[in-house]
Length: 54
Image (cartoon, rainbow, N blue to C red; front, side, top):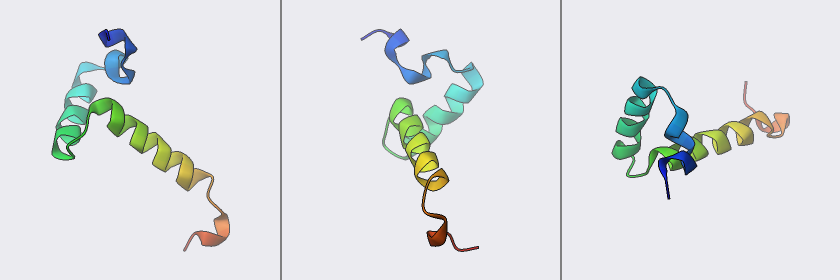
């Protein structure tokens, strides 16, 4: 697989470095970290509003 197939391949260098540190601390890859963040965002954004505690 080439680097062009990675989600993180077009990120700015500084952002990729920071995400790489975070991914390493969480024993995952940058791409899996991004997928996890996006999945959590979608889950939270579209969750039933009755379940949200304000």
